[in-house]
Structure formats: C-alpha cells, structure tokens
Length: 501
Image (tube, rainbow, N blue to C red; front, side):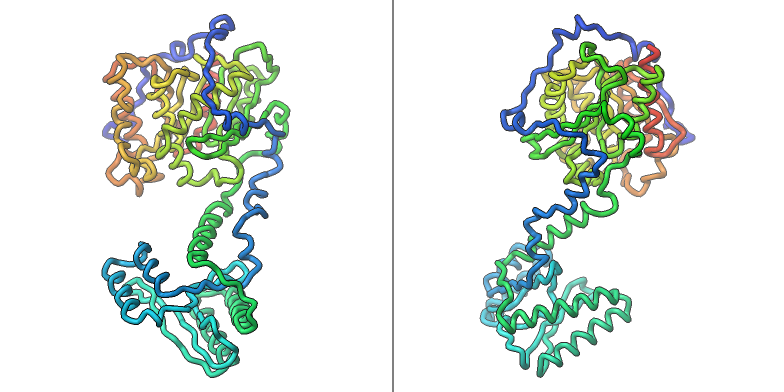
C-alpha cells in the first residue's frame, strides 16, 4: 500500500497473455477428470426440475416435518431431581468455577430440596423458566419461583413467592406482567400470551394432563429455536431478478449433490450459453455464493447472446435450500474451517460429475470467489497441485477477506501468507490469476481487522509475494467501488476479455 492508502495496481501480464488459448476438441478429448464420488454420493446426486423461481427455501423454513413441532401443541414440564441439578452445574458453561462449587455444595447439603422440582416449561412452543410451581400443585395455596437478574454480577437469581389461592396466583402473575409492559421490557401482546400460557400450565398440572419431559429437553429445544431464528429471518432467501431468470430458465439445469466429508447437500445450477452445442467443449465459469449470483448469470447470458462475451457454461454453487445461504457463520465454516473438504468436493466430486455431462474446456475454465469466497478461491488457486484432477486454469480472487473472524480463528490460518506452501512444492505458477477489489472498501469493515491485514492490504501483500516468486500470470484490477458493488461488473469484464482474446 502506498502513502495515499491506495493499493498499487500491479499488472504482471497483459490480457492477451492472460486470455491466450482457444477451444480445441482434440486437446480436450483426452483431458478427463476422474470422478471420486462414493456410491452413496452418486446415489444422492440428482437432477431436478428448476426450482428457484418457486422459492423452495420458504418450504424449508416452514418445514412441517420439524421433529420439534410437537412442542408447538403441548403443555410440558421438565422435572429434575438433585442429580440433574448437579449434572447441570458440572457441565454448563454458564457458571463460573466458584459458582459451580457453591451450587453443588448447596445441593449436597440438602438434596431433598432439589428433588421433584420443575426446572423448565414448554407451552405452545414457548419456553419458560419463571413462575414455576410445584409439579404437585392442586389448585389451592402454593408457591412459585420467580426469576430475576442481577446486573452487577450478570447472573440470574430468584425468590419463592407464596399465594393462598389459584386466583391470587393469577392476580400476582397479571400484576408482574403489567409491570414489565409499563417498564418497556415486554410488549402487551407478549404479556397477554404469557398470561394465557401460564394459566394453561397451571390447569394442566391441576388436572393431570400436562406432559412430563425428559431432563435436557428444554436445552435442546432452546438451541433449536436459536438456530431456527438465525435461519428463517428476512435473509432466508436467494437474491435475483425473477423476470430476468425467467427469461433464461430453459437453459438452466438444477442438480442437488451430497458430500460425505462435509455431510452437506449443495444446490448446483448449470446455465448453458445461447446456442449451446453439446459437441463443443466450453469453459466452465464456476461461482461460489449462488445465493447472490443469479443476476450475474442473467447478465452474462445476455452478454453472450449479443456476442459481447465468450460463450461459457456458468456453474453456481449454493447451499441446499434448507440452509441459510446468507449466514456468514455457515460460509465461514465452508470457506475457511472446512476449506480442504470443500475443495475436495469441487475438484473430485462436482466437477468430474458435471464434466461427464458437459465436457468442459478445463484449461480455460474459471473459478471465482468473493470476500470469504475470495479467501477460498485463493486457497483453491494454490492447492490445485495437490490433486490429480485439474478442472481450472484460471482463478478470480475478489476482495479476499483474510481478516474475517471465521478465517483468523482457524488453526494455521496464517499459512495463506505463504500461499499454503505452494512455492515450497513448486518452482513456478502456471495458472492465470485475476485479483480484484474495491478502492473504497477498507472503510467498510475497519472494526473487524484487529491488527490483521485489511482487504486492500491483503491484496497488496498477495501481489508483492507473487512478484517476489517471479509469477507473471496475474493481473490486479481495482474498481471505483466498496466491498461488493463491483462484482457483477468484474464478472462481465472477465467474460468480455475472454471473448476479445
């Protein structure tokens, strides 16, 4: 990076050198990829109807086969004895060591006080740890445990309140919930729902219709609810222009593929170019993060149709529809933590499987990734030599986020700084590299760098290392853009430049 903070543009080769070569069926006829899929993976690789326009993720988000759905239609209580409490104190990360010792000592001092206690409640899908009565409550006088929070210690505590009748309990409950509403801690509709649910709970205990749940049920259900919230919010969709995709849908084939190493399914879409000839060996233009790429696919298709871009077969890799493809945690898991297994899937499973159908021109095929996907495309570009299959001769590394927490937390992540030992194994680098970023993107995520290279620093340091190793097969291009706004233009630029050469 120079004194102005701009990344210097390093052009190691001309575009004519980058894009040299043409399709040659005789050369490609013997260049066959070896399919390493297991029988189970082959059995689970299927071509389906094109589903994207039907928004299949909506069905996944509201899957009626959810095994936890039973809790939406029940009143259940989880009853613990003193051994359950001791086990919880010993295994939960919620407690400090001092608290753990203190609480366990209290249980051992009076174990009977911790037997036959309701620890948690599920009513119509809602979890409750508050206002918990005795499981033997008969409708008369009784007591409930009310949970509170100590901001000084950041810990929960509670007290037991007595009441002389069921009606007094309802009055106590209503008053408490109304206070939470007036203090701004709870919406009125939520308070009304909770009041009704607690009445259902007490009625179920009184008449014996309440379900008895196994210890640990509430924890499993709580974790499920958190995952469901994370995967079914506003971002649980695929981003694309429905009209533009509708126009090219007849050229899109949809495949669903399972990978045993990752124990995951992927939705892979293959879009053939206008005037597709199955006898021609086209380059594959393979893009990660399919959730965002379909507008780019439509734009690329249109550029091919007008003769502005090289005819290519576009392949987009996405998570299957029951997963939130926007999730940075999930993307970090694949692109960073499990990058070897993901590259195994692409190199030895997906590309050979599709190659048997489409017969790609491997030397001119392109692999693209942006942001965390850019971290992965860098990994793929400098680990290709470890594989028998070589499906790509070109890699686009766009805004590689070497600083992302999901990357820096992975063991050995700093190996990216020596290209994963590639130049310890090899003297030269033969593949074409196109490295890109937005000139203004460093400010986008400055709170996340934490002493690591910013995006632009990472790009500059990468180009410096390549130059030091004598690599001449790369180009760097900076766009007048922030982090992601330039990506569509980049993909079009590359396809047009391939047409020119």
